Length: 490
Image (cartoon, rainbow, N blue to C red; front, top):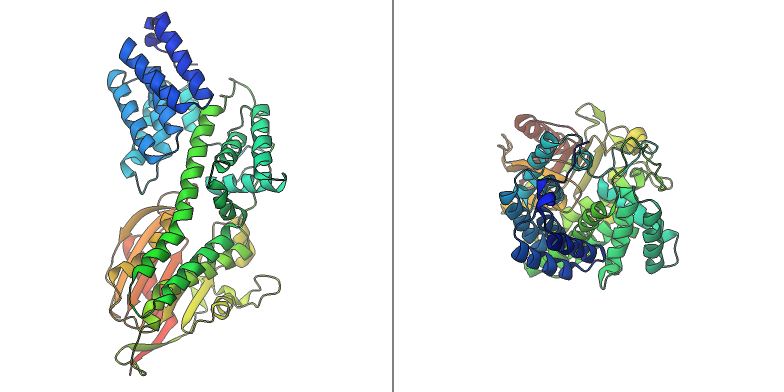
């Protein structure tokens, strides 16, 4: 097996080696500030050293803050300028880039593949290459779950730990203890680091997003909708901004917390000895999202639509609005070869018409939401084959930003937006905007969503398949024309 230590280690003086060890000990004890100070002093006193650069960068990453991540990248790049083929530095920089948010740091995220390929080229059998080849092995051969995202598994493990302990502090202590008993399990280490992060001041408030992930989305959107209704006399107002911030901030904080925990866990877990069998995970495999979860998320999406349109729907208008199309809404019995799911019972105690369930629950006239696909197999898949939802009403003068609502939701989810385009809306007029996206375990562009708006309707079509630009736009126009009828102006 190729070794990660290079000739730099042989040239290191005893004093520099002692300084490096002191930095490592400070970082292991989570004294990140001290570790950075010692590493900076050692670099100034003893000159460039690749492992000092690497540990200085990790001391920044451990702070779990954007500014420190930026500084860590600068440290890694300075180190690679002096030692371009050092495996320790390349692997550390690759891990930082792999964990970067593709929307906020697209350049950094894009460099991960190049850095990982370079490590593989220099030392294909090294510990660094093995670690980057499978950077977050959350599942073992005994409990595979490739269809689930990293965050889904991470949150499942936290919920299980909280359910088995009397409180957060005890759950964090037990998780840390178990991580010590399973030093090769990255998943166990991630659970321990995540729970430890929640114990810091102010962060336990985010636990409600973990305990009830789907209902929390619905609750946050409901509060955001209320803020809009309170000032519905204005088309767009400060309440709209307040509602958006309220809905997005908690989830953004949770995403940063989870990402930082995964990075710290990778520094903590020990590499599996050569030829040793992979140990069985002590953690149970998380279940995939169920049909009840899809129903709640569907209700949340419908509520999000009306949270955005409520200022326009409730603003002062003449008693009889004129000159906008009045549509009647009828769901097609089939869309892209898949049947309307409303003919199948969905949840015990709930009527069979899922679209009717959402509309009646929200008591909003003019809403529609239709699910297409075979519900009997949804539990083993990433979602329905297609979802068509929207509203009818007076949408004259709706700004272009309104078409970005679905993208806003994707930016705070586990999915990555791969491409955005605005095709011609077709003979029916209006505007159309499409986005392709995928979650952590899917190929880029695995799913497509297109939103339309015209004078009398708004809607979104989500398709669980890869489509090119023309095919996606054509499917969106087909869905709109199949759902909306009439369009008479009075």
